[in-house]
Every structure is written in structure tokens, then in C-alpha cells.
Image (tube, rainbow, N blue to C red; front, side, top):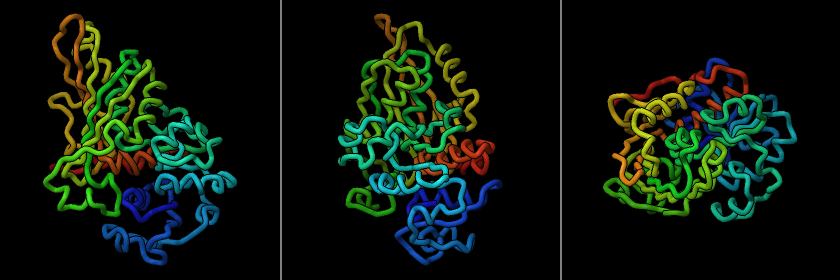
Length: 342
């Protein structure tokens, strides 16, 4: 594992340490070098003798079957070529290899991609869409947290050919999505009683979502996405607004969502309530749902909802779900904890 001192690294480590079929052999990091993993992650204190090691990528993966990368955007891209020179499989949690378009990467990530020739060579790691491709992939780019949540909300509509044109989305997120290093806008006193937007209509997950929905069957989607920071530690609540033909009523949507996710072990549509963050917090589960208006002038408005834990299904455990598929293991291995309530 490369990059293990952040929140995503913590979630990777705590699952890998109890995984029935894999062994975590080393954790490479430029922080906490030589210190036990519990120095960065108190919940892991005394669970392992492993220590953080400052290692070159090739040395970090020596003798391993697969490497999990929990590095920041722009850092990963510089390290991947060295990993590709080995035989190791790769699951990357950064945004460096999710896009196929180098121009889109430069616009949304603020830098030219150092290896544009590698864009499009990673399979996009949304199991609910690309499960069979992931199984045979050498390199997988795990989706972003907002992207995972919004894509799951809209995947049934895209797959049925009902999604096209402008889609308006609001996504509400917890503070852990900003990473382990505090800033003026993520510091607890400025966030605990506050709601604020950031990167409205310019968030880096927009092109990732548009690419994925197009792959699923959407037609010429333009995404108008406004993210909102909320006083939560974990969780994302996404609401997407879509105009549908009057024939697409609630029973039809129920059947569509249930059919789409019938073989998705970590996506559920609650039957007695709408999705809520506390129901998935601490788990790899996502919840989806919708509300639909009465038809007016031949059109219905649907509000599609999805919730995830941004660090887990939106991050580390989805990376492990991808790892399981790539290694031919049970997709659910080590990931079935339901989380807590409330």
C-alpha cells in the first residue's frame, strides 16, 4: 500500500488487517516514517506491528500481487509509470487516471497530466457499471466520492436511455472529504454550525460523472453540480433533478431501480423511507431512491437521491471491493459490516 497516513489510508488499513484472503505487507508514506500505524490512526493502535516506511514505488510493491494507492491527486501520476514496470496490479484512489481527456484533466485539476498517454488505460472502478471489466483489469481507477454517489443516483435512468440534456445536482458532504490537513474552511469552528458551497459548477468530479453516465447510456448530458459543505464528519447526500416523459411514473421507476441494482450487493433502495446518511455511515452500502411529480404538460420531474459514506463506499472500501474483483475473490470480502445506528 502506498500512501497510508490520511483518512482514506486509515479506512484501507483497518479493512485489510481483517481481510480473510489478503495480507497487508507494508505501508509506504512520507509522513510518520518509522512510526507505528497507530501514530497516525489511533483506532489501529496495537492492531499490527507494521510501521510507515519511506519507500520508492518499486520497493513498496516488491513481492506483492496488488498495490493500493492512497495518494493525493497529481502525486499518483508521477509514481504510476514505475509501478507499471513491475507485474503488480494497481487500484488508484486519486483522480489522476479516472478521465480519458487530457484537456478535461488540465481544466479541472489545474495542471497538465504528466503522462497523458496513460489516460484511458485504467478501468473505471464503479462495480455497479463495470464489474466484468474490473475482474480482468490490471489497473483500476476508483471513483471519487461525489462521483460514486451521483452516478448511483442516476445510473438506472442512464441505462434505460432516460437521461439527457441538462441535469441539476446538489451534493452535501461531510468534512472528512477535505482530507486530514485542516484549512480555514474545514476547521471545526468554521464548519460545525455552517453550510457553504465551494467550487460551484466547477468541481473536479464533473467530467468523471459525465463520462461515466455516457458509458452507461446517457445522451449528451450536461451536469450542473453544486457541492455543499455540511457540519458532518462523514457522509454524502446527493439530489439530482431530471425531467422525464409522463409515461415514466413511480411504479416504472421502482422496477427500473430495483432491476438495475438487483445484483449489486452494496446498493439498496429502502422501501419504507428515502435514503439517509446515518443509515450508511461506517459501511460500504449506498442507498438510492427517488420522488416523482405528477405529470404536467407531458412531463414529470424526478428527484433522484443517493447517499454514501464518502470515506468508504466513496473511497477506501470501494477500492477494496475493486481489489476483491481483480483478485478473483468474493466481492464482499471484509466489507459487509452494516455500520452503526444512529
